[in-house]
Amino acid sequence: MDMKWLRTFIISAKYENFREASEELFLTQPAVTKHIKRLEENLNILLFERIGNKVVLTPAGHKFLSYARELITKYEQGMIDFESWKQGFNRKLVIAVAPQIASSFLPALLRQFIEKNPDIEVIINVLNSYDIGNEISGGKAEVGLSRILPVQTTIKAETVHKESVILVGPNEPGLNEQITLQKYRLITHNHPDYWAHLLHDIKRHYPMVKTMKVNQVEVTKRFIEEGLGVSYLPLTVVKEEIGMKKLVEIKPDRIIPTTSSTYLLTKVETEEVLIFTKFLKATISSF
Image (cartoon, rainbow, N blue to C red):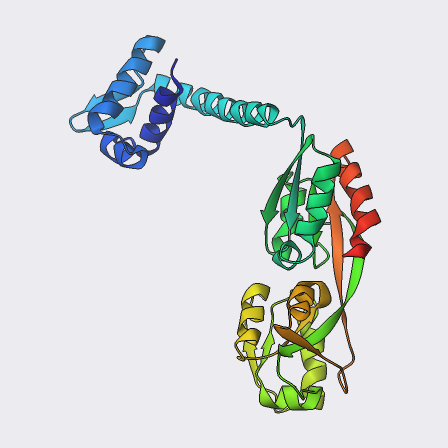
């Protein structure tokens, strides 16, 4: 039985229309008809009833649909696992990670982890911090690295790192906190955790500050480089740009410095999870 026939059958069953199925599958309509005919011949039963220009699933078609989906799922997963084996992997670890972490210390950390554990295939899913808890709870990822605590009570969460949040501006001489917040727009809401209380504190001391919401850290950094504003960002997020003198740290005056936490989220402690957790705790402070 050809897997192409099963895929064609599943898509045709979705639409109960061979023309629409052919468009999704990038096949000609005669090719779709041929796949279905071959599958019916192989099973020795009709899967679709032809009514004029339309097709509808027969009782046998309805029954076979769940089997076809299961066969395709197992086949595709088997091919993924086989490809991993060909590449030398015999274990897998899926990590759901917040964008602020993925673009800061994670690449260097992962390089070291992969070098020490070449047999573990690491898959990274970059998600909003608010969605990482669901990813762990639903079993779609084994490990989560988030900037906020999850709402799910079944997930284990622990703080693995705390870092300073600093005021960052363009590379311009003579900037201090007061001048910066009077001259530039304050770019806010690029971090899921600290902006509510931080913004309240800023407006208490600088009530005339102008703000601009930008929900991505990488965009925030580019805006700052171009002189469009300033922002409070975790140190690891801007460490490289400060070192390259693209951005500058502006020392605090009236605003009380805040911190940003990195939380490790887990649910089932597999061997791979334990290996990564131990490595993370031993190395994260160096980044």
